[in-house]
Length: 271
Image 1 (cartoon, one colour):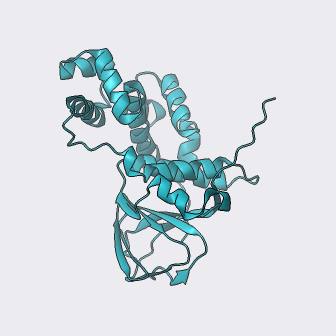
Image 2 (cartoon, rainbow, N blue to C red):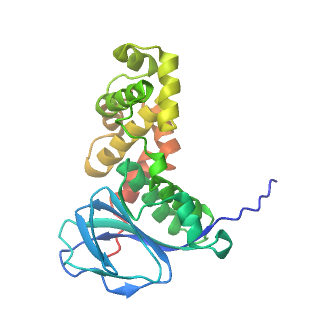
């Protein structure tokens, strides 16, 4: 049996999902912990000390410990956001560790759907009776998504980066069609091996992984909102084989499509 001793620089307290009922506002408080907020829908207006933040859908906010924060407007009826409290361990040199990761206090997340997926994984893990280090690992992945270095500027002059972004756009719009590295390369009039290398350099994913991720995200939405059969969902998301769809879906979410549908049709609500 392999035994590892892993020292993580953070400790999770708790997290949740807030879904507005159109009443009330964020309370006034000063916490000892850090708080990450990610808005999925609507706009959250909140003030930290003298700074006012308008956090829109797809944006994150990092609230600092020992700073007073308070809501400035009543919650809009369409507001939906995830929150997570955590501590930075003393051996991580307190706030210097946050500075090392260079996490902006307020920013637009490049991949909001992936951020939502991470928070959902966190909430699922939090429900377990026995606490594991998975919560801290997921938190680190969330913080990584809030690091500007993870987001390549689309307007880069590098022609290879521009090509990778063209491939990314095709994946986002044609994921439901037969798609592969070779078909993308033909569409973009380039060598398949070169396209694969440059895409991985820019996005830290293989093209196949990116295609699967986009298809799984689409499937997540259909499974929650539609009454279609599993075969229909698989077909609409670009999978011709239901068994393969189940395999890829479980690989990316940790759940089978059936379990995903049962779990997320009833949202994790904390209001």
